[in-house]
Image 1 (tube, helix red, strand yellow):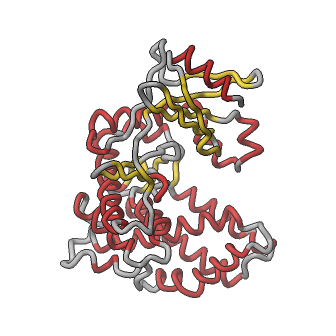
Image 2: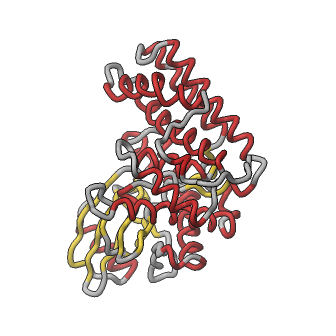
Image 3: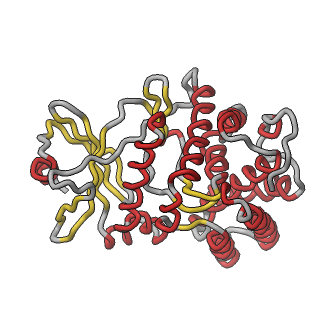
Length: 345
């Protein structure tokens, strides 16, 4: 897509005259930074279905449907109205009052959104204040989850669902690695037992509505911005309806990695806003395993993949064994709660 096309579209639809345009990223959508005379914007162009089919797997395409995009807009507007401290940017309306606009590319319609640019920097692990930022990010996740319980119930059935069937699909996909030769029978048996444990935890959480809601599913360094004193969450396009503690498991995997001090800070920040029980901490560890295994599932048929071979070996010889034995998986997070709280599950 030419920048000239974007110039003309923004001028016609939003009465904005860009001075500079730069492509920032592209996956299920193309993301542009647009500099105008008096402001800076982010312009999203969602890729057409046939492009998505070629560029990403079918699971990713569910986030770019008209229904999902409209839901994302409502979520952003609700958060902006009810939780201004989160500083989430509301999409900007076009001249005709619409938030969702449509650009014609090669004769086909493509959905577009324009939103304010947030001046800030991504979280950087080498930054001297990273542990403080990780703590703030945990608190932000808790505020998002509180907002989900309080204000976003009408969006639950508008988002893709990641619950027990999602886990069963991961089990089925990883099982295909047996024929591909990327995992052994013993490794798969252990993975299946661990994911069945995740399903059991999900069954228990189903009894408590406050454990369910809109889950961001992509809270990582690149999707938090440090803007002044605040840590701001961005990129809500991959939200699902599911178990809120999944966000914490994924944060510990993404932001923690080999940095052992980071996960306890994330949990401390979350716990300061939305108290956790000792059982919740075990569930967070299980959800971290679920996230990592979902990535393994995406690559399980890649013969010779060093990521699959090394990750499966590490999990089946360590983390999954500890999880199934009731032993700590994430160093230090079980000590976050100094005094044992009543079990919630």
